[in-house]
Picture 1 (cartoon, rainbow, N blue to C red):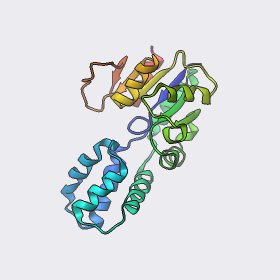
Picture 2: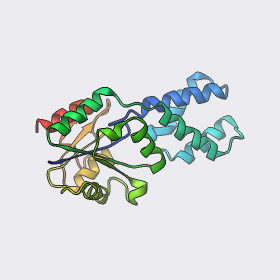
Picture 3: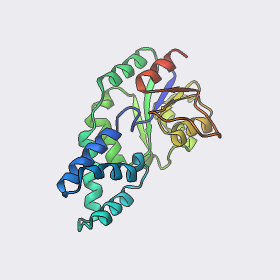
Picture 4: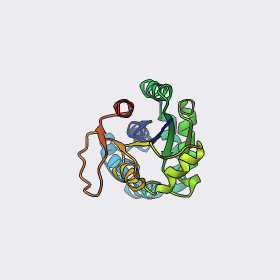
Length: 214
């Protein structure tokens, strides 16, 4: 029973859509032009910008008196509330499980936010367990977090595959630990010359199918 080590944001659960919807609601609430959503999405950098830095950028641009901590809380809660589990993703995970694979989530982020996403969407019913960097004390691409995921379900890393959308965290992490990987390209072109994914696909369903057909 090999491990299927899966990223969370923009792999198992869409983050881009929920962030945009939160952003549109927030901008409307402060009376900002709807077109500013493009600026907000750009500054967010697909979630790579630190939440506190994003909050400060918003406060500075709109000269808001809202404390940064309140903005960060609103962002966290708003994105979680907008997040849904795609039924096709749930089906793919069930098929992987029936085929003998053990799905485990390995993600970077805070326990409060990532755990809420997993539980509130019902994703917890389709994975064996999950490891979140804040709790683990180590983040992807460090190989230790993948080893911790294997320990969590008492299985060896040998034979595992890594699936994710981040070139550095997911594919770089897989390369560092010596595991094959599937990259969800999301319309991007691979450019890193240090390592490369074993397979490239356009979404989670195709990724699971690729692993099962290996």
